[in-house]
Length: 186
Image 1 (cartoon, rainbow, N blue to C red):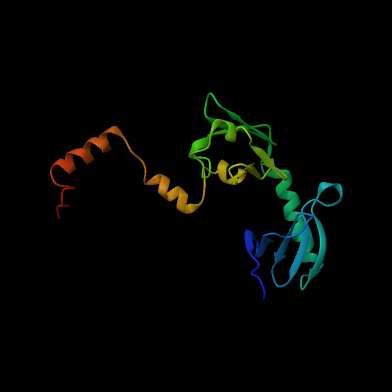
Image 2: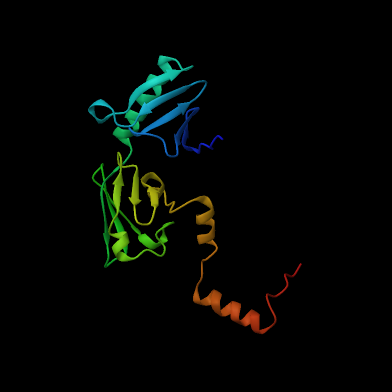
């Protein structure tokens, strides 16, 4: 009897689709699809991505993809270190461009109910594109955090719907006492 293979798309860029296979083997690598497929080790000789094999993709397409990755590593801010500040309740991220970024830990998906001890176990992933909490099985994208995205689209939508204020709470109580929300007038 066969088994299902879970393939997760982690990036779509410039007509390329980058995927990982769940429970795949070492070393860490991705598969890149366009008209064909290429397998690229994430950390090859010299710590840089390295082509393992390619089928149905030209050497030019592969070189272009590797060059785009190299350019991104040079120009995009990456995390070089991260820590949790218990007093402020924030995760502090040191970036490769010399800047420091901080965000309220419990606003992020997967960290909402975490203890201070769990939050203190933050790790920088790979080349600095992500943050990871092993005990929480939580991962956050550094570029996403810098863009103000603290989780998936559905998570962010749920957070937006939770906006409350004392005035909103008072209006809801008053409406409830009168039998509900007033009807809209035409």
